[in-house]
Image (tube, rainbow, N blue to C red; front, side, top):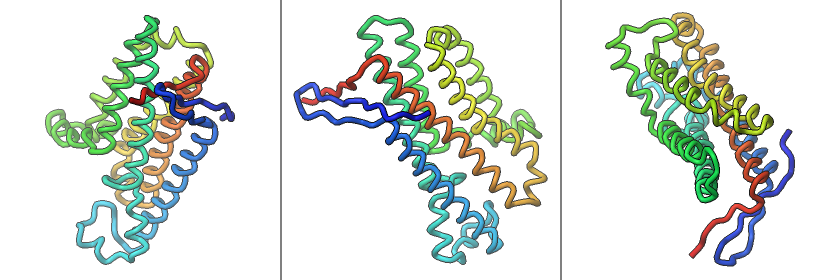
Length: 256
């Protein structure tokens, strides 16, 4: 349950403190996610009602209404949209908190400091990928090279799964080191995020022919996938802020 604990952001130079209500912050972000999801699905529905599929030529989109065009700016399955931007921001926030924890742990000489820092770097990479869709650039080359189909139709999931497995193995000791409450939250957040990002992508690959004839169901799947990813990001961000609050009441921000 999201509580109302406050994290104080203090300035080392003596500037006034700012108190961050963790529960209110995460609830506000969750509301933003829900609003973007609703606008995105409304745009997708109106687009399909106008007979324009997701893969249509750009010229076809010019004939859509202004309302539909506006709503499509929120598309969670598109690029350079509000939906993609929001996910980028959530991942970047997680990265910043991870890097803060890692830096603090390193200064304290605590165990697993490098794991926190490495995880922060990984989330910086995930944020960058969300912004510019790097992984999608690998789909065609890998598909042509490996001749993938079915659940591996979107071939980027192969290195994606290998990466997830590698990180999981490398972080077994890290997870055992965590308190049970944080371990469970981190694992659940990871399951939601990976299940949405990779699991649903594999499902879409397996059902590609079905989706070709059921565009609305495909759009629902897109939004469920993004919803799972966002839920994982939100839970992880909340868990990280709660971790900081548990071990460090003040989040020090050096100002010069």
